[in-house]
Structures are given as structure tokens and as C-alpha cells.
Amino acid sequence: MIGSWVMLIYQKLYGARYALRTMDIDFAVHIAHAQRRLRADLKLLITSLGFTDYLAAEGVQKFTGGGYEVEFIGQRSGGRNTGFLSVPEWNVTAIPLPFINILMDFSDVAELDGFTIRFPIPEAYFLHKLIIAWKRQSVAKRCKDLEQCTAIMQVINDERLHQVAQAQRFGKETRRHIAASCETIGFPLHRIGLS
Amino acid sequence: MKVAEKDIVVHGMLDDEYGRCREVIEALLAKVENYPRGALNVRRKQNKGKEYVYHYLVRRDGKKVINRHISEKELPELQNLIEEREKCRKEIRAYKKRMAYLEKLLNKPNPGGGRHESAAQ
Image (tube, rainbow over all chains, first blue to last red; front, side, top):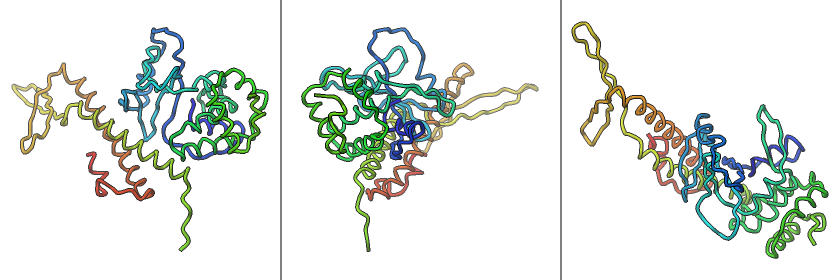
């Protein structure tokens, strides 16, 4: 699970509170390997839980139930391509977004309320938000991203943050975005370990 | 009167939610269009001591009421489709209700004139 619902997990595990979240629940999916064999029919699984599937803009498949919306996100490699990513292994389609691999590559698993949930470690979530905040077109969303960073700042482990940052290859613009976010929330840039 | 300053994050999130509701409704309405219209009706007829059950799909077309006979073979699939359609409509009603609430919070004009509940029925 990625997106703002992760904050609820951080609240339960680390006591970092941030209450604002929309009703869409995002899940990240790996699309790196070209294995086309169906591993699990997520569409069938989710609709059998009472959700209704529908095609949103650009043909992306989403699910809605009880006012909640479930959608899948995949790593977007390259430029600003639109459309959707087909994930035949899980029988779903995913929205391509950049920097999603940060969240997937550094994740942890928790057992909460009888569910096993994989979620990004706070350091990965923090770095991801620092980056995407300045890529947002909406000022409100940018502020929300940075507020979430502020909420989890207290539980950030510098060593793990270094590991996450060192595993990435950032361009100049992304580095600028990280620096701008750090300045906004008052987080020392050197703690990320980017020179 | 003291007026609270607008919180950009809260307002933005509510605005996003409003936009999301609208998009979901549009997508679900498009989906509902592809499902069969009408309701299933059962007619029972007695003949020579035996009871015969006939299923019909009843729908309105302007002032006319159209009854289309449904064979036993068609029935399970049609029942599934109608069930799916009702699920979609239920979702649409829930989203319209939420939109009506958000319209009040965000001071947005209500294009439905407060008829959100009935519009989806």
C-alpha cells in the first residue's frame, strides 16, 4: 500500500499522526518482469469483496465500493507518457507514475487488524514526498505532501534514509526539489546524505 | 463576525474529493449504460394441473411498457448483470450524496438543484 493511507500505519506503528486522507486507496505493483502468467486475479478478488470495477480516464481500471476507491500504481520509466500499464500477472491495469520504485524497493510488512500489509518504510515515504511535492501542480497537494513529511520527520532514521537516497540516481531538478522541500519543512539536507 | 481563514490543505483535499466523486459518477454512469434496462418479472401459469414459470424483463420505453421473455438459459447471466447494475447505482447514489455534502462545504453551485438522491434512481 502506498499513498496517504500509509500514514495510518505510521500512526499505529510509530505514533506519527496525520489524519487527512482521501477515499482513494493506492497500491503499487511491480511491472519489471515480463512474466505474463496470471498469478492471482486481483480483479476477481476485489469485485468479490463487493467492489465494482470501472474504467476511469485514459482506460485505467479502478474499483469502487462503499465510497472507497482502489487503484494500482506502477513505476513510470522514461518521459511523460500517458495511458496505463497493463499488469497481466494480476489482471489489473496501473497508473504509471515516476519514483514509485522508491516506495516498493524499501518496504516493510505489518500485521494490522488481521491483514498483512506491505508498506514503504517511513524513510522511503519521506523521500518520495520530498521529491513529488514540487512536481505537484496543485499547491494544496504540495502542502499536504510536506505536512505528511513534517508528521513523520520525528521517526526518520538517518542511516536508513541514507540507504534509500544512495540507492537512487537523481537528476539536478529532482535534487533541487528535495532541497526546496527540506528548506520548507526545516529538515537539514545533510541528513539525507546527498552531496 | 469572525471568519476562520481557509485552510489550503483541507480545502484542497475536499476539492480533490469532490472532483474524484464527479469522475467516479461519470465512469459508473457510462458503465450502467451497458447493462440491460428494466427489472425481472416472474409470471406463473397453471395448465392441466401443472405450473409453468416464465421470466420477463420489464422496461419502460416512453409511455410503453415492454415485456421481453427471458429463456431459462439466459436467466442466470441476466440476473448477474442486473445485480451488477444495481451495485453500480448504489455506488452512484453514495457518491452523489457525498457530492451534495461537499458542495455545501465548498460553496459550489449544485447543478442537480439538490436532487442528487433521486437523480441516480
